[in-house]
Image (cartoon, rainbow, N blue to C red; front, side, top):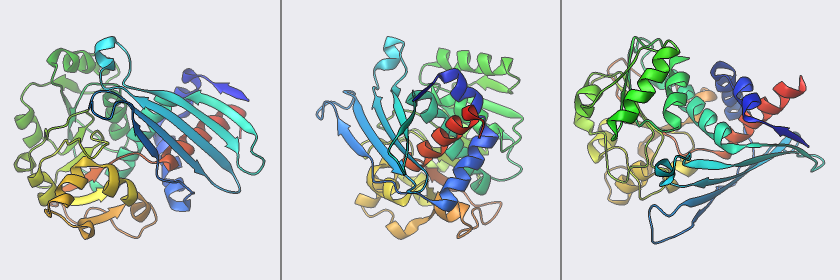
Length: 314
């Protein structure tokens, strides 16, 4: 069994290649039971979560991801998402590879958002806002910038110094990044807004979204969490990575559904529909679109296969 280190994962999972690997996997499909989701301290929102996510293609590979999500880790100087990914031969059951799930997860999550943005954001989008400055934020900026040509990328975080540090880091890579402190003004000025936070209260107000904007929601991965308000959900055309995950786990979808503000039929499409051509994506330049990502084991499997086959020379 190969041990695939983070440096090898980083080298293999460059965004153009990873986005295309995800597109192919959403086109072909795989078996992916709804992930096991266990609160380590059920009465404590910050107590941590254990996720177990299997996926397989019967004639190809089988993958199993085990991940912990610890909201308090930022204060400890540790990433909030950690874990391992095991890759097997689905035909023989032989273990093929073991890799760090943190790097795999952040990259595939960012690539899924960029894949969706390719269908849902305006092709002439030039201004991006990144809400959050954690481990996901630089990945999301790099991924979105691989599908749209941004001339201005702003970063907002509830700790302004972290936004400033990230903006400076990415500026050294050549990205047109700068930190901002006025979330409303930055949202109103942006064509694409990407959120990756652990917020339990809405951050983005629907009234702030300009015509033609695309809202990418990556955080709020439990029903109790929220990154957008009710107005945002009602004003936008709603899309999800998978319907099953969106309808059961995404607080930005589950909460307005529960009180009757939206219906299941209001979900226009998921990534299966978009990648397979069953839905065309953005319908007009003025349409406001919202993509809610909860993550899917299919995405991990596609990324792990790419990392494994890139290293084995396939």
